[in-house]
Length: 591
Image (cartoon, rainbow, N blue to C red; front, side, top):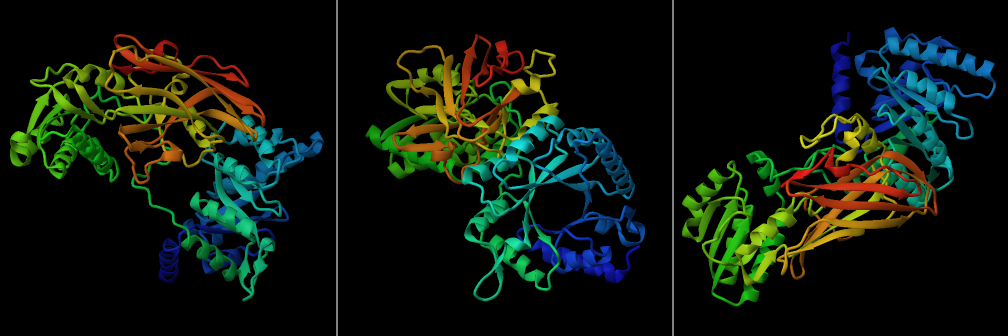
């Protein structure tokens, strides 16, 4: 039981650490009195301590020292179990099992193991797999050496992509290339460990890292990794941590509007499903999208050079594009008539309220599918926001093909063009989550256990490695002079310059609203601050090692019939995979 004084100390510690922009930890590489370790952690503002809890094979007196609050801080060190000599390996394995069992009984569930790069790690993988049915987290110290990733990748593939294994990346004298560090971002790295020996003293006598190591530290802080200092406790240890805190406070880490990192979500199907008001509310907060739309509408009105403009908003939702159109017309000093066409009964009451109280006769609310709407007059401009994260994946081509009959012969569509983009992705986290994903879209016609790998996901992907730039896949234009099929096929090739494990493909889009007014989530042309769309993830079940110099060839189809649209994809190089989602058996988008 904690006394009031201890509770006060813990509250004060929590208050201080909550104002530090990075989580700090210390790895005690030498055996130290446990009580002393805990006092050090508090004095250095560390939330975590990596500690050896055995002394000459004897467990420390944990029950009298560790309370529930301190248990949260401890990552217990375990011995390795790999050895070519089977008899010795068996002894090491027994020792490992015994220590883990004792610590687990003390409710310690986070462990740290030194990963030996030169060893065959098969036995370690086998032992770790035995414990993955328990709520245990295994962390592995892996040095940032040139070929370390290859050893790790072999081990990771043997353990079966568990979310219960993590990496503590240990800085060494070797400075990884920028691409090598980016590759580690695609792995389950939880912390960066820096030995105090890597620090130098500056002119004022304070410890600092050299420029190359500081760059890696900044990347780690941006990735929200824990920063661990390791070594023997030094009298000026706080100076080392103050340096880390100083670096962290000078890095701009924007707070996410939505806490959705690596969260797999099925794409919306607004043609099939009536979106709820709360979904509209989130999208309407976007500070960039509607500003760009207003600019595009204003420019289109100016180019029309008339005093009376008719605009059709196809898929009006709760009215943000109607508002943008009214503002644009007001800026252009023209008279405007707007038809707000919406099929979703959940959005109609809001539109009618705006019409009655604010918009008046300038706006007619039309409860109809835009494809079926018979306009009372031809329109000068057709505005829509039917784009999905992959551009066409919410059936904008089909919707606008059906709605373009509302336009005059010289009518303008906003957007007038949009394209999808792909590139390879490596992400332990995304692949692991796909393995465990139970959320299958209702369009799935298959009982296959692999259905999770035959559908796309909308997901922010900060913990991923993308080895190449994107390449353009499909492009659509509106309005069309001649209506034609929206089915497409293309093969894209990506040359790889660093060994990687292929887990699928990341998808993006960009759109030309009108002339030079664009919106984009494609990384090179991204509209900064726009959050209405997250990237797409197309997984592949048959993950493969791709070596430097190999070419990844991916084949992609957009397939259509009278009832639905779906994607099919496969890889043909460096290895062949099956066709994923053949005939739309696991996922399709209903027309």
